[in-house]
Length: 157
Image (cartoon, rainbow, N blue to C red):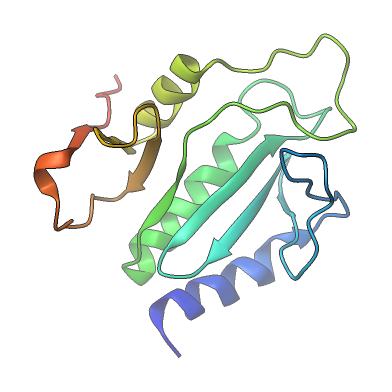
Protein backbone atom coordinates (compact mmCIF):
# COMPACT_ATOMS: atom_id res chain seq x y z
CA UNK A 1 0.00 0.00 0.00
CA UNK A 2 1.42 3.40 -0.98
CA UNK A 3 1.73 6.34 1.41
CA UNK A 4 -1.08 8.12 -0.44
CA UNK A 5 -3.33 5.06 -0.09
CA UNK A 6 -2.55 4.91 3.62
CA UNK A 7 -3.45 8.60 4.00
CA UNK A 8 -6.70 8.02 2.10
CA UNK A 9 -7.55 5.03 4.26
CA UNK A 10 -7.03 7.03 7.46
CA UNK A 11 -9.08 9.92 6.04
CA UNK A 12 -11.97 7.63 5.16
CA UNK A 13 -12.02 6.20 8.69
CA UNK A 14 -12.15 9.67 10.29
CA UNK A 15 -14.30 11.65 7.83
CA UNK A 16 -17.89 10.60 7.24
CA UNK A 17 -19.63 10.52 3.88
CA UNK A 18 -21.80 13.55 3.21
CA UNK A 19 -24.84 13.29 0.92
CA UNK A 20 -24.24 16.54 -0.95
CA UNK A 21 -24.03 16.11 -4.72
CA UNK A 22 -21.21 17.62 -6.76
CA UNK A 23 -22.12 19.59 -9.88
CA UNK A 24 -19.86 20.81 -12.65
CA UNK A 25 -19.74 24.51 -13.51
CA UNK A 26 -22.14 23.84 -16.41
CA UNK A 27 -24.74 22.58 -13.92
CA UNK A 28 -24.47 18.89 -14.80
CA UNK A 29 -24.37 16.45 -11.92
CA UNK A 30 -20.99 14.78 -11.54
CA UNK A 31 -21.26 11.00 -11.65
CA UNK A 32 -18.75 8.55 -10.29
CA UNK A 33 -17.04 7.64 -7.07
CA UNK A 34 -16.10 11.11 -5.88
CA UNK A 35 -18.11 11.99 -2.80
CA UNK A 36 -18.01 14.77 -0.28
CA UNK A 37 -16.73 13.84 3.16
CA UNK A 38 -17.51 15.70 6.35
CA UNK A 39 -14.99 16.58 9.04
CA UNK A 40 -16.40 18.59 11.93
CA UNK A 41 -18.34 21.51 10.36
CA UNK A 42 -16.93 21.41 6.83
CA UNK A 43 -17.07 19.16 3.78
CA UNK A 44 -14.52 18.48 1.09
CA UNK A 45 -14.33 16.69 -2.22
CA UNK A 46 -10.90 15.12 -2.69
CA UNK A 47 -9.08 13.35 -5.52
CA UNK A 48 -6.43 10.83 -4.51
CA UNK A 49 -4.19 10.61 -7.60
CA UNK A 50 -0.59 11.75 -7.20
CA UNK A 51 -1.47 14.05 -4.31
CA UNK A 52 -4.30 14.81 -1.93
CA UNK A 53 -6.12 17.12 -4.34
CA UNK A 54 -8.71 19.48 -2.90
CA UNK A 55 -11.44 19.79 -5.53
CA UNK A 56 -14.07 21.59 -3.44
CA UNK A 57 -13.97 22.77 0.16
CA UNK A 58 -16.99 24.24 1.93
CA UNK A 59 -18.13 24.94 5.43
CA UNK A 60 -21.55 23.63 6.32
CA UNK A 61 -24.36 26.22 6.52
CA UNK A 62 -24.40 26.05 10.33
CA UNK A 63 -20.59 25.87 10.59
CA UNK A 64 -19.76 29.50 11.13
CA UNK A 65 -16.62 31.41 10.30
CA UNK A 66 -13.45 29.30 10.39
CA UNK A 67 -15.32 26.00 10.16
CA UNK A 68 -13.04 24.66 7.40
CA UNK A 69 -9.83 25.23 9.38
CA UNK A 70 -9.95 21.95 11.40
CA UNK A 71 -10.52 19.98 8.17
CA UNK A 72 -7.57 21.62 6.41
CA UNK A 73 -5.37 21.14 9.48
CA UNK A 74 -6.25 17.43 9.56
CA UNK A 75 -5.37 17.06 5.86
CA UNK A 76 -2.03 18.77 6.57
CA UNK A 77 -1.46 16.33 9.44
CA UNK A 78 -2.05 13.41 7.04
CA UNK A 79 0.31 14.97 4.46
CA UNK A 80 3.04 15.30 7.08
CA UNK A 81 2.49 11.84 8.55
CA UNK A 82 2.53 10.03 5.20
CA UNK A 83 4.95 12.36 3.36
CA UNK A 84 2.51 13.25 0.60
CA UNK A 85 1.56 16.60 -0.90
CA UNK A 86 -1.71 18.48 -0.93
CA UNK A 87 -2.65 20.33 -4.07
CA UNK A 88 -5.66 22.11 -5.52
CA UNK A 89 -6.84 25.08 -7.53
CA UNK A 90 -7.62 28.23 -5.58
CA UNK A 91 -10.80 29.46 -7.19
CA UNK A 92 -13.92 30.96 -5.64
CA UNK A 93 -17.22 29.36 -6.58
CA UNK A 94 -20.80 29.54 -5.44
CA UNK A 95 -21.42 26.32 -3.55
CA UNK A 96 -24.19 24.05 -4.71
CA UNK A 97 -27.44 24.09 -2.69
CA UNK A 98 -28.17 24.16 0.15
CA UNK A 99 -26.57 27.60 0.57
CA UNK A 100 -27.86 30.34 2.81
CA UNK A 101 -29.15 33.40 0.98
CA UNK A 102 -26.83 36.36 1.40
CA UNK A 103 -23.92 34.16 2.49
CA UNK A 104 -20.49 35.63 1.74
CA UNK A 105 -18.56 33.94 -1.07
CA UNK A 106 -14.84 34.62 -0.65
CA UNK A 107 -13.04 36.53 -3.38
CA UNK A 108 -9.97 35.17 -5.15
CA UNK A 109 -7.71 37.40 -3.02
CA UNK A 110 -9.43 36.35 0.24
CA UNK A 111 -8.97 32.66 -0.65
CA UNK A 112 -5.32 33.17 -1.51
CA UNK A 113 -4.62 34.89 1.83
CA UNK A 114 -6.64 32.22 3.69
CA UNK A 115 -4.56 29.37 2.25
CA UNK A 116 -1.22 31.17 2.70
CA UNK A 117 -2.10 31.83 6.37
CA UNK A 118 -2.55 28.08 6.76
CA UNK A 119 0.89 27.19 5.44
CA UNK A 120 0.25 26.68 1.73
CA UNK A 121 2.39 27.83 -1.18
CA UNK A 122 0.46 29.44 -4.01
CA UNK A 123 1.83 29.07 -7.53
CA UNK A 124 0.85 30.43 -10.91
CA UNK A 125 2.09 29.50 -14.35
CA UNK A 126 2.73 32.54 -16.48
CA UNK A 127 1.46 30.57 -19.48
CA UNK A 128 -1.87 29.93 -17.68
CA UNK A 129 -2.83 33.42 -16.57
CA UNK A 130 -5.00 33.45 -13.48
CA UNK A 131 -4.74 29.76 -12.53
CA UNK A 132 -3.53 29.61 -8.92
CA UNK A 133 -2.51 26.22 -7.51
CA UNK A 134 -1.95 25.54 -3.82
CA UNK A 135 0.75 23.21 -2.52
CA UNK A 136 1.59 21.82 0.90
CA UNK A 137 4.08 21.15 2.48
CA UNK A 138 6.25 22.21 -0.46
CA UNK A 139 6.14 22.72 -4.21
CA UNK A 140 7.17 19.82 -6.47
CA UNK A 141 9.92 20.28 -9.03
CA UNK A 142 8.57 21.17 -12.46
CA UNK A 143 10.42 20.89 -15.76
CA UNK A 144 9.37 24.45 -16.59
CA UNK A 145 10.56 26.17 -13.41
CA UNK A 146 11.04 29.47 -15.23
CA UNK A 147 7.31 29.55 -16.09
CA UNK A 148 6.16 29.29 -12.43
CA UNK A 149 5.85 31.99 -9.77
CA UNK A 150 5.26 30.88 -6.19
CA UNK A 151 4.32 32.79 -3.07
CA UNK A 152 5.40 31.23 0.24
CA UNK A 153 3.09 30.71 3.22
CA UNK A 154 2.40 33.80 5.30
CA UNK A 155 4.02 34.05 8.72
CA UNK A 156 1.35 33.94 11.43
CA UNK A 157 1.79 35.38 14.88
